[in-house]
Amino acid sequence: MNSVKTYVALGGNMGDVQETFRKALQLLCALTEVSCLATSSFHWNPAVSPIPQADYLNGVCCFYWSKSPFQLLQVLQKIQRDLGQNEKPKEAPRIIDLDLLFFGNEKIQTPDLEVPHPRWQERLFVLEPLSELTTTIEVEGEKFNIVAMKESLYAKCRC
Image 1 (cartoon, one colour):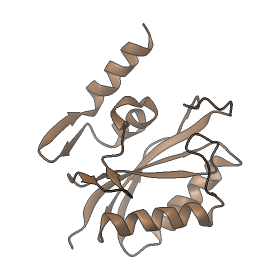
Image 2: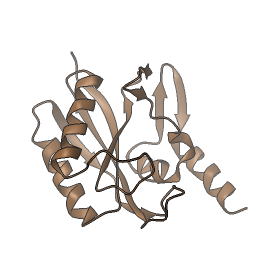
Image 3: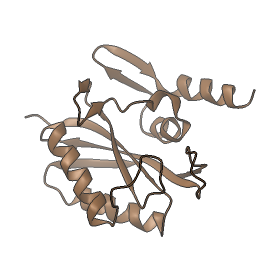
Image 4: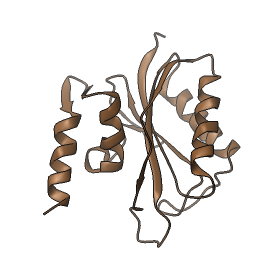
């Protein structure tokens, strides 16, 4: 399989999140299937949850992956577990969350994996760091202008 340009979102709000992100990125870089890692800056954001909790630190990384998206999902889940993330309810606080946002221009819908990640277009905490790494994303021939999408969400937030 050829290497595929991949985007992964990082999020967390428990413990030393910056150190956890550093370790996660270090573990990704150590993989032979990963090449050319780039990372956005990290941004603090309010939690999107009905559960009261601390703000989240969010960012996005981009790299080339030489195996299947399902193998990448397994690796991301293993990194989360290795860094102390246990199974929790969807909106509960997290040590680290690694979400596969995009896998090349593929659209994947299975019970275990949905790419692009659901609701990515509605989340400033995804669009802001993603816009630092790319201005456009193409999924199955449909192009998305990340900067315009981000600006549109900012405009809605300020109303």
